[in-house]
Structure formats: C-alpha cells, structure tokens
Image (cartoon, rainbow, N blue to C red; front, side):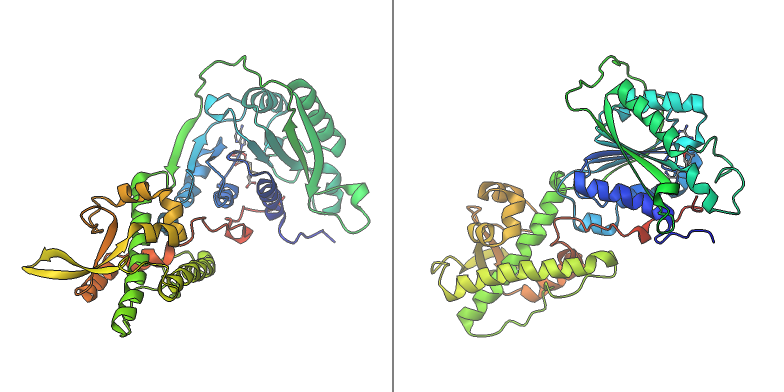
Length: 431
Ligand code: SAM
C-alpha cells in the first residue's frame, strides 16, 4: 500500500519553512522556484518580515497567482509597525542578480531536481557563492523512498532530471559547504511506515545550511548584475508612512476622546449618554479578514479594558484634576456658539496605551494632530475639543466616513499571523 501523508507532503514542506521562520525570524527571505507563490503567501503574515521575494523561471506561473500577495483590507485597517516589500521576479537561479544578495534566508523547495546536473553547479555558485544568504533550506526528493510507491516507474515527475539518494544529496551539500563556507544539517518531511525510517528515510529530504559566522561574505562580486525581470512589487501599508500613522492615530484619539467625554458628561450631568459610538465590543465588519476577527475582538476588549480602567481611575479617583476635562466655548459654527468638552492631549497620551505608543511623545502627538481636518484642537494645541451639542451629527458623520469600520479593526498593531497551510493555494500534486 502506498504511503499517504497527513498533512499533504507539500504542506509539510512549507510548514517546515514556516517553523524555521518562526524560530529564526529572518527579515529578508527569497523563495527560489516559487511557482505559484503559495509559500510566500504564508510567509507574508510573519510580522518581522521586511522583504519577501519570489523568483521563478516560469513568469506565467508567477503572474497567475502573484496578485494574491497584495495587501488585504485588514492590512490597510491595521497597518504593520514595520515596512514589508513584496517583489516577484522572473529569472533563472543559475544566473546572478545583485538584488538577491544579502538575504537572511533563501528557500529552494523541490527545485534543484528540475535542473540539469551542470545547472546544479551553477545554482551552487549563484546561491552559496554569490547571493550568500545567512541560511538556505533546500528540499529535494529522496530516491530511496521511491520503492514505497509501487506504481511509480522512473522519477516522481516527468520534468525531474535526477532524484538523489541520501548519500548523493549529502555529498553535494558537503561540497557546497566546503566551497562556500557553510555548515549543513540533514532532515526531511514525509515519514515512511513505522520502523522503516532508517531504511527509506524521509520522502522529501531537506538540507538546512547556515553560513559560517567567522567567514567573510565573499565581496569579490562588485558587479551590478540585473538579469531578472521584475514582475510585481508592492509595499505594504505601515506606520512608517506618515499619512498612515496620522490616520490610525486620529482614529484612536477620536475614539478615546469620545469615550472620556461621554464618561465625564455622565458624571457632570448625572445622565447616561447612550449614544452608539462604535464600541470595542462590537464585532469586526464583514470586510475584515475572518481569521483576524477573534484576535481583534480580544485585543479590543483588552484595550477597552485598559482604557476603561483608566477612565474609571480618572473619574472615581479624581486622577483628572478638576477642570482637566471641562466645558468650554467652542468655535462659532453656523452662527451659534457651540459648547465643547476639552480633552487634554496629556490625558489621552498617558492613559490610552495605543495613543502613547503610536505618537511616542506628547509633542509628537500634538504635531501629528495639528491641522488634521478631523480633529479640533484648542487654541494652544493642548487639548482635543469635542462638540457636545452636535454629538449626534458628529456620530453620524463618523459612521458615514467609515470611522466605525476602521475603529473596529484598528486595535491590533500586529497583523494577524496566519500560519494555517489551508490558506496556501494547492499545488498541482504531491511528489
Ligand atoms: N517551490 C514550489 C513550492 O514548494 O510550492 C514548487 C516548486 S515546482 C516543483 C519547481 C519550480 O521551479 C517550477 O515552478 C519551475 O518553473 C521552477 N524552476 C525550474 N527551473 C528553474 C530555474 N532555473 N530557475 C528558477 N526556477 C526554476
């Protein structure tokens, strides 16, 4: 009986890379022979990733699925802390391209067996001698496992130029290490039936290479080779972009200022304000990625709890000095003087954790809010003014402007990690 694999073998190979990434947190990763980008689609959820590149000789394959690497609506609603650039290239791993140098990790999953042995030599030179990534993961079929597939005649795939035994793979890998200053560990995925591991090994054998620390990265290549064709390039929204930072911060400030205002008005007037400003406990909108919803809800509750506690403090323990939050005469609007509640930036900055984290300092908070069309600051710029009398209209405006949706989805600073291989596009078949 043929061995079956659960999860499927291609998922196990990708999971192996994902586990490595989780442990080692590389920031720049290139997937060589990336095919339809299914591994890259999972790697982009890793929050420390800054540069994610895919290369394949078959541009048509890459183009078919590369748009799936584009940011989702949740990536805009919860921008990353750090930048992420995703790039896809058409090119051959047997040729140099200087844009692929200096990576933390290069992966080559079921690729080398598609190369002629002469090209495997070029591959070794290019990847280990020229690109010199800090780590390399290479997987390739283990031919000693093949007898367990009784219906298999020849190689596992018609395009394979060879399939190596464990000894052959080891011999090639050790030579690469000597030639280019790496060390290697051997492992694999896809186990044989119990008790047969020693005899057959893993179905896919894997070498994990690490560049030797003391050895200088080869700098003899001062060339500027650009042999690959760029097919796709996308910068993910991040808080490094000042416009995005301001948008997220303003959403946060308006939300918490409104919470403080309402609490304070209740205390002052003894009346409950039952306005339905979008609240943290409300679930994510349909646009939000389903996988993120629980996480968002949890984080919203946590943040709400933190700010709720802060407000409780403010009100019950008189932490806010009398007059810190106060009624004030606001701007003259539509011919009448509106009454405002003044919420000091210092209170928002020190009591609402995300406002503090996003702005860094009180001065920065003031600078980022200044002149923003959605925020009314007091004349000296030290407080947010909320219009008390027109709160119902304001609330409608906020709803109309998408504030509710953004608010519900804005609490998670870290993007949701989605390591579930079910999100990967299925490859055409296991080998
Ligand atoms: N790595 C993919 C994965 O795990 O989902 C699957 C790899 S698929 C079996 C082999 C890929 O290598 C194909 O997409 C093929 O186009 C690509 N390939 C073959 N020769 C190549 C070369 N010289 N340079 C770059 N890619 C190559």
